[in-house]
Image 1: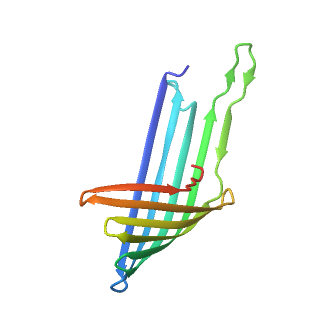
Image 2 (image 1 turned 60 degrees about the vertical axis):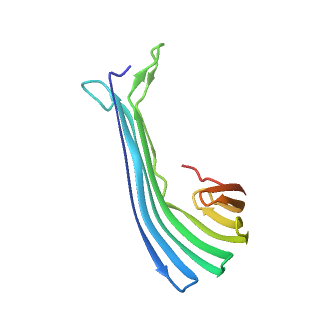
Length: 181
């Protein structure tokens, strides 16, 4: 129907890590980042290349901080906190059209531009080396996504066995949730 089609995808990412040694047994790592991605699609004719199309933009700004403490050579614990601000925009447009039976369908523009929303998380994870090649890890994660008002608690458990220096066998179980795109 259209002789012209173009799609322009784009993305960007920026991040900074700050690591701080608090003591011989504890360190803190803080990360700030910004990511953006989106695309523009246009369909049309030589005379009007944007009869139909969409503009999509998603941006995310994050700060995360993790404190790791080594209680003993065989036990370390990690506590983390994370906050994200998420912004998005979705605009789709179509031209006026006529059906096969002659009904005129008006041009439309649909804009979905929700308010900036947030996602927060807290997590705690421990790793215990039972004996030299076997390590058990356990953790708990709390997530809250403001847009859908969802709160999730996710347990995790893992075993790791080191056969030789370059070979590990990992077994893991966990409950994982993903927020909508």
